[in-house]
Amino acid sequence: MSELIVNNVSMMFDTPDGGQVEALQDVNFCLQQGELLSILGPSGCGKSTLLNIIAGFLAPTTGTISNGTTELHSPGPDRGMVFQQGALFEWLSVAENIGFGPAMQGTPKHEIKQTVDHLLETVGLQDFGKKSIYELSGGMQQRVALARCLANDPDIILMDEPLGALDALTREKMQSLVLKLWKETGKTIILITHSVEEALFLGEKMFVMAPRPGRIKQEYLLPFAEAGLDHDPREIKASQDFIGKREEVLSMIWEMEEEIMGRTEVAGA
Image 1: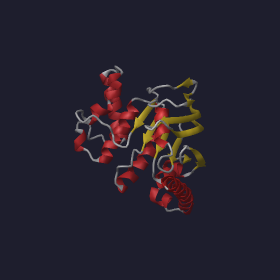
Image 2: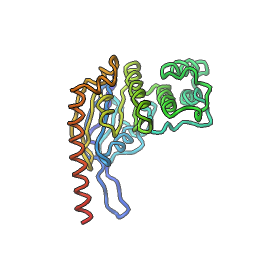
Image 3: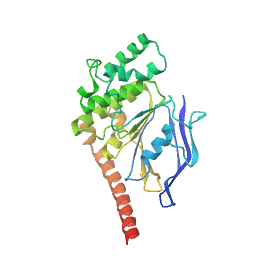
């Protein structure tokens, strides 16, 4: 059982005027295999920067990222990424998109077909394998993106606002699918979102990040993701426990947003 270890990660960016911006400051946490973490916070708190460092797209200024005993310095097959827009190959069919990674690794065709057929059924697209990407709705395209990620069998799935572009009803259905895939695959999942409700519902563990320099302000251990596997999401989100936690987190983020606005006004004075 491997674990993801984020150790004293900080990130500085150079600015065009010769200065520097501290995007992250001493971020530390450890995720056991199979945990589902949601991360939210005000704009500019470094959520996506942190995710890109874990993915290997950015190198931190200081600190390390490790998967078990292996320190990570670049992208690798142990981590899969799902973006807000599916980033699918428009010239390939649904099935070809899902099987693209295994095909690039030289997996035999009959094994690819077995994997693709299984994943199409898992995400509810078993009748759409031969369809072109442009024939699918936004929600269906995100299902393809999830299946394509799973086809590579990563240890860790990283999601950057994966449901942000969907309408409210589709988004709620996709939240339930994410929980289903989490439970069935046993994958470690880290999900970035701007939605407090979504972060509460999907995060077995949730971090609220403070504004620049980005750091973990508050950590929550939540029961809603596990409950969402067996109960109606609307009932969970209408419960007093959920509403109380939502208002607590909203107030925290609102205070941080006001602090950011105050800094901006002082800087512009």
